[in-house]
Amino acid sequence: MAIRGIVLVFLMLLMPSWALAQPSPLEAPIVKPERAQLSEESKALQETLTNIIDGEVRVRRDIAAIRRRLRFTQDRILQDELNAQLADRRAELQTLNSRLEELATGIPPEEINVPARPAFNLDEEIDQLLEPFVSMMKVATEEARQIERLRQLKRVTEEREELAQRAIAGIQSLLAQTEAQAARKRLRILLTNWEERLTAARDLKIATQRQLETRLKTGGRGSASGKAIGNFVSTRGRNLFIGVLVFIGVILVTRIIAYLGHRFLVRLHGPDHPRSFSRRLLRLVFNVGSVIIACVSMLLVFDYFNDWLMFGLFIIAFVAGIWYALKALPSILQQASLLLNLGAVQEGEVIIFKDVPYLVKKLDYYTTLVNPKLRGGSFTVPVTELQGYHSRPLARDEMWFPCDEGDVVILSDERWGRITFVSPERVVMKDDGGSDNVFTMDEFLSLSPRNMSQGYRTECQFGVDYKHQAIATSDIPKQMAKDVRVYIERRFGRDNVRNVAVEFIEAGDSSLIYEVEADMKAAAAWRWEEVRFELAKAAVDSCTKNGWNIPFPHLSIHKLN
Image (tube, rainbow, N blue to C red; front, side, top):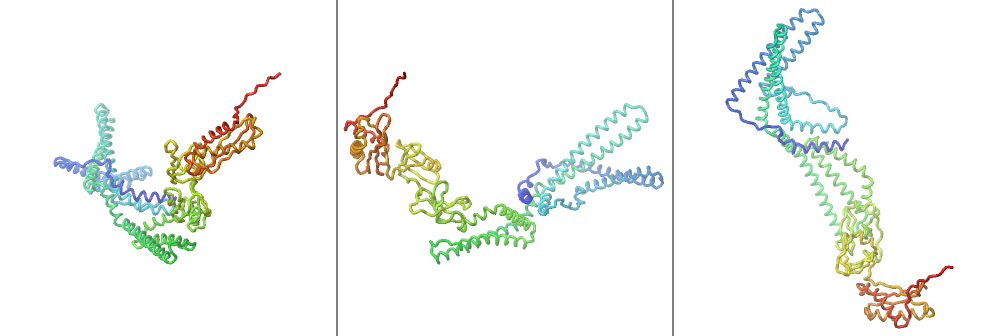
């Protein structure tokens, strides 16, 4: 209910400034009448005035006659009928009086006899605060609504006039065809009634037209809304402006005091002094207190100008803020614990933020996260984004990222290349053909990058024929390792080879299987694929040199009896 009231209040505040000041789409351009037209209108006005006065005389005569009959009548039924007729005539007389006054002044009766303000039926206190805004809107739109009402009334009178003319024409036609005296007498009475209706419709039409022209000439377009806006700006708008100015001024003064206090503490303890719990608590209390003082100052401004409307509106906003705070209390408490460095994330520790480790450099309303391995790896995030995370102490040899720019990596999908760009959002890898492969950070880490620039091992499997079984675990591994090492060192340089080994793995179906391994240094990282190919060549050359047969798979066919 409170939220609905607040929304309605602000909509009402905004509507007069853009909607109510717009001219009515039904307004027709005012055409200045000619002298001849003015003369005709004057004649019609005089005729209408005479008709109204004559009608009043006639109605008063009827009232006097009914009263005389009532004075000498003893029949209760007839008295009731006469009383009803008397009430109708009095109502008709009142209508004629109102029409005469309206015709003479150009002001409708409802504006002269202003009714008492109706009481609000809603029980909520918030609706009582909406009443001034509703009244302000009614005042702002009064002129446009009256003009539209007169236009609608003019259309109704024109329809009544047309209807009476058709009725009179029909009665006259029927009267010309009727010969019976009783019927003709009744038709003449009916004709007289419709002629009176026609006269009343024309009189009302002329009066309505005059009022409409008066409104259009004197009221102007948007005058009421303009006055309402001007009144709002000069009173409540001024109070609101001063209140907001005081609020901002208090916030600025408190921020200056906080800045001077911070500089004093820096001079006292040094710029690198860690922020203790007491300093964090003092800052949090100071910030909350400054906002409360600013709000109270704004309320005092409204109270000074006796603007209870703005005061009440601010109270509504304050209550809505408290209601929201109660709904979000767990989140607020979690944020407060983070700001006090008592939560799951603490300053000076490491947090895994979006799958990447970051150092919590400064924990505040806007927390600074740092990763030294990334371009743009120092940025700030709102403390609200750290809810649900947890930090841990910084390790001695913390690995901030699997690779640096310039490193050669191999991905789990067998793609490989040199890393040329690393940021918190994306990673660019240039492959052997010169193409750039762009990965999002999540995609790159999901492919389990293997960094080859710190040294690496490459291997291949090789088989030797079973007829060399006698020397399979002794001479062959030693000799093949020597031959492969000489080949690899000659091909890639002795300084780039860390170690070469040949190990017997298993006895396969058709061969004795060995694994040939080469441990290379970082300088040969870009040539890792070439090393793998050359390793197989070196093993073949060693077998050829030493006369070891390389078998191939045999297919055996057994005949079943």
